[in-house]
Structures are given as structure tokens and as C-alpha cells.
Length: 118
Image: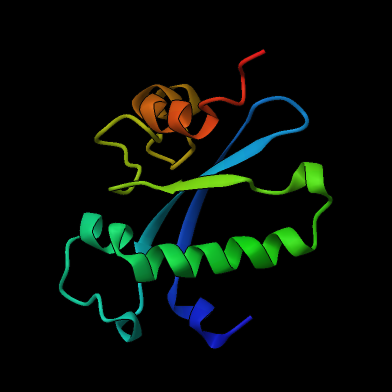
């Protein structure tokens, strides 16, 4: 991987839809100045094509070392950090998965649209 990884911090929440499907929801804590996003809001940074492309590259590289059923098929970048104030993590920073799944239900449904139809 490139040295660029040193400047990128990711927190990851994985949500699976059965053993054959896995989706990841990512959020970024910061993005390097080299990507031309300095001074922009967190939401603007995660929405920027450069950010999405960078994360897609990491996901692709990660997936190369996994079996197909283990790979990340889809992901979304969250518009803000998960935090205690919004009830998504505990004071010791443990993830409250049901809260996150409820808060970002629309993103999860978007990722799984069509895949659960019989």
C-alpha cells in the first residue's frame, strides 16, 4: 500500500446480510492535505470524489486477499464521526451497533436494495 495510508484514519462498521453478503459502512476521521480537501467540512470531505476513490482503492486491495464471500461488496462514507453525544458509542468508545443500524437504516437499505428480493 502507498504511504498515503499513513494520513488516513478509518473507523469501520460492518453489517452482513447472511453468510454470502457483506457491506461496510465507513467513516473518515481525517483526510490528508495532499488530496486537496484541507479546510472543508467533514461532510464535504467524505462526499468528495477523491475521498470515495481513495477508499474504493483500499477496499479493492483488502478484497484481493479475501475469499469472495468475505469481500466488501458495498460501502458508504458517513457524513460525520460516530460519537457519544449522538449515542452511537459508549463513553469507552464501544460501538452501539443497534443505534448505528437504526440511525443509518436508510444507507443500509440503499446498499441492500434488490438483494433481498426473492
